[in-house]
Image (cartoon, rainbow, N blue to C red; front, side, top):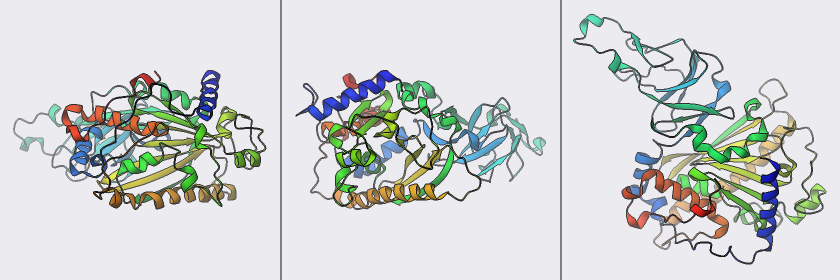
Amino acid sequence: MDQDLIDRIKSDMAYEFARTAPPEGFPAFHDIPVGRHISDEFYALEQEHLWPKTWAMAGRAEDIPNPGDYFVFKDLGVPLLIVRGNDGDVRCYYNTCQHRGAPVVRDDRGSSRRLRCQYHSWTYEIDGGTLVSLPDERDFVDFNWEERCLPRALADEFAGFIFVNRDLDAKPLLDWIGPAAEMFAPFQAESLREVYRESIIVPCNWKVTAEAFLEVYHFRHIHSHNGVSVLDNLGAAMGLYPNGHSRMITPYSRQNIERLGMKSWDDWRDIDNGDFGIIDTVPAMIDCTSSAVSLFPNVIIPLGKIGFPINLFWPIDKRTTRLDWIYYAPKDWEGDELPDHWQMRRNQYNTIMDEDKANMAPMQESMESPALTGIPINYQERRIWNLHEEIDRMIGKQNIPAELRVEELLDRYIER
């Protein structure tokens, strides 16, 4: 996030405040088909083609600091085993013994230099998943050891986070993140630690939950208190990255500008963060706006000088989503009990999430009504369209019925 990017964002905000219509030549979006959110057919396509081929955030590097440390990850619909190898690299295997299908490890996390199934003691090494030991080999006819290795998935690290991908032919993680990485550069994310985590179940499609965090069009209607909103959506500056990623930088409202002692929406200065420890390499823009970056398909990160929550949206079924948020920050206290200022921050952020849930919870039933024939998307909501375009690329246009597709319209607006 260099000065050129910050200056460009400020210029984009000024343009957004001044415009009276979408930019000349910006495409008119057709309605997003409702069936993408409510049909069994589209949900099945996502389960077959999207989630098995995408990079997914699975954990943190400090979860497995030493060789042999492991944890189990199930949010992609299959049990995966993520382990630190003897060379320090992270690896991922299916947690499925190649004998009778028992889990190779039963604990959610642990440490072992060998992975030994507790059912019949078939044993695998951590660096390649190679089968190295089994009892009573004499009783197997023409046994092929090489065919009985643990099946693997891809695993890699970025900014202290561990990502996995079940598609062995997927592009490398850093290539997939691409220019979206510029948003993480100042945050020293590798040194941050978990402050707290929350999880709720939302009775709607996972895309309904994700879409709520991809626009600020709703903010003053859902999150205003006593008629006052802290953000001004009219100046929101969006950036679209390759592979479905995006950013959104939203200026503060007049009332919030006055509260913080700023002179104007673009008076980006260091703000007093009270008792919170700050990341001193983060630019002042982050303190004086609402800045967020999204990683396709299900990661939304509202950035801050004190750290950031990771919002994750996991489909349980067509109508149900698990929404997790995990706050990471410079942690300068001992023990698990939150200091008062962090407990206050937790309550504030949980209130925002409760407001979003209250809005999203009734939507699935309403969307399934025949009264909704399509979902119109405006220029300010273009990050949503970017999400849907990438979903279709992952599934493959040829696999999607014509009436459920979205047209590719945003290529010329992608920042490469």
